[in-house]
Image (cartoon, rainbow, N blue to C red; front, top):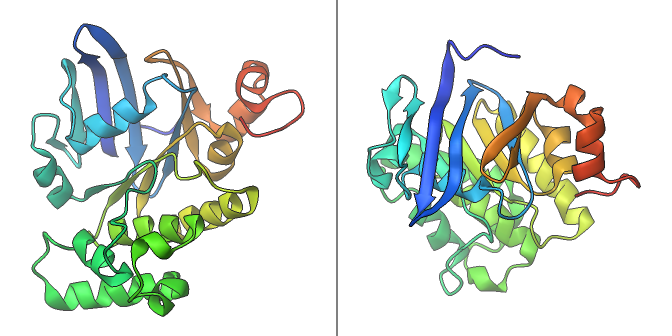
Length: 246
């Protein structure tokens, strides 16, 4: 297990409620610089709650979240973004009637470094050439895979250090799921750490360095992905006897 001593993100004893319902129960995890770490679990396990709490859109009942040594669980979401934690939400949530270019500019709306914004926009276009070709089209006119590229590009425009990806494969065909996997790996190669939340356990374990298995708000298993892929319980509950993605 990788050490948490120099973790970029460190979560300790995190408990989160919605009213009286407990969504997360004293979970602890960490993401080191340069890692891809995934949280895997079924619907209702608390995966999205974890992402929302890290990004500052939901405040915990108890526990602590540190990013690069700074405590962030009591910060407003806009301050969390300024520190470099950026979320790619489930369902993409792009602005359907706005152009591709304007969607990308939204990602940089809190930045003031104009030259840096121009540089990052060009980098997004190099990474996703189709977005350059369709930059004047409305976001809603893009295919599902292209909208996912746009959602990721928008997040990259915020100049993240840690990217929170919430179910990036949801609603996509197997071919596009494979493309999303390539995108995630390419982003990580640029030095951006990634916390990946996925119901598709096979995809997540294949892409990530380490994984946490979340079950009804608690971490049931954790470890290096190559070990968890061979774990009998993980195979039975998440990978399926036929090898199909969960």
